[in-house]
Image 1 (cartoon, helix red, strand yellow):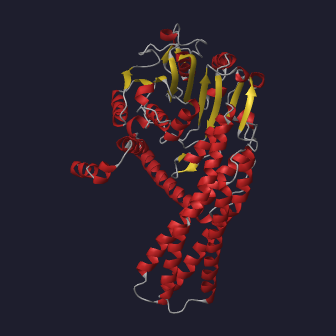
Image 2 (cartoon, helix red, strand yellow; image 1 turned 180 degrees about the vertical axis):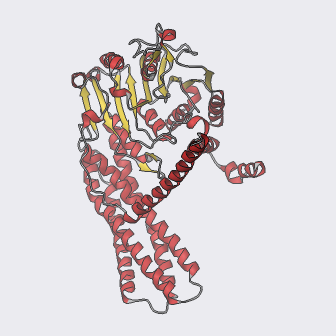
Image 3 (tube, rainbow, N blue to C red; image 1 turned 90 degrees about the horizontal axis):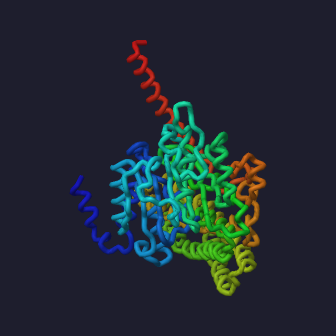
Length: 535
């Protein structure tokens, strides 16, 4: 195994690559390691989507970046990626400070930084009782994913901690803090300097918790430094299916936002990676980030993102010509080997050729129009309307390509001709390549449409089920709750035009098999427990 590993990493292709190749490989292995439920339930690893969202929202581009529950160092690595996209050297503009209680995890984090060419000061500490970097009021940025709902923190040891500016949350009869969530929240707030920003993952229970926790939350809201709250649906974590929320603080909020909190419910935005794991696609993440840009008055960034989506729509439409041409050639070759191709198939083949030619002509016309289009909001709205037929045609072409493939494949298999298996297999690969490229066309257009439909004037506005800018009076009227869903309402149900019944049925079948397997294991475990009890 070791020999194979060395040979793999000695591949000439790796030697020729540029950029952070070994760092990316390490990130991949960390992700797989977490997915295997390794090491304390995978708590050392925060899903990359959530880390990237935090980084995108607070933009840690200078000074000190602290994570007092740093795990494997993902917050630091994604911060470095963000800085690199600004064409700066992370080591020259920021310093990373971390704390972590588990020695094994500290080694994972140090290795993670090292393979990315980064350095950080990561110390062993239990943050509930220690501030190893003495960071009270000094941090430019705080990022973290702390353990949720810890209930055994000794209240006597921390009652005079200066990192608790809003006081202790609830204490139980045993003299322990009933829930440690608000300890973490207070710590993160207290670390920030007067211009500091923070973003962190927190249990969904915390945003509406009652009792003394609600009192701490009230004082926090009244400080005017809560910037935004984001709800994330379940299944984003590798080893926990619970939903969560992202909290954001900004001690340098402009005066007109001082009394405001951005409530963003992102639970209806996700990409299905596996049966049990969801994340954000790069485009979905960019779209959610653009809402924060509008919150900060950065219409220029919002419009640049819409322009990018539309440009890529055209580029991918153009790129679809080659794989479609290869599919048509493969189709023609296979049909030539079949003694008798029925009239329906020949008619469909001719129509597909005509449709592809018309598609190419439309793309060329719209490309020329795009070059002279003003890239302001009005121009982008007009451009999107002009590009919509291309997106819809790409969907229609997918259906026709799939239908024609099935017709020809069936006739090839029924013909009894020998030597057609390889041609059928090659045609299937050509079909997949053409379909995947065409899917990208409509997908990218829909990302632009998603933004323009919700924010047609390129300005922040309330969107039912997605976002609302609320003031402290409204928050007070809702028991000081910071749960976004309480303010934004329920999103109207939208019919999914791309719903694939066969794929959905396959997913249900796979999930049922998994549940059946789990049921068998649980039944065996229960039986074993009974036997050990002598029942």
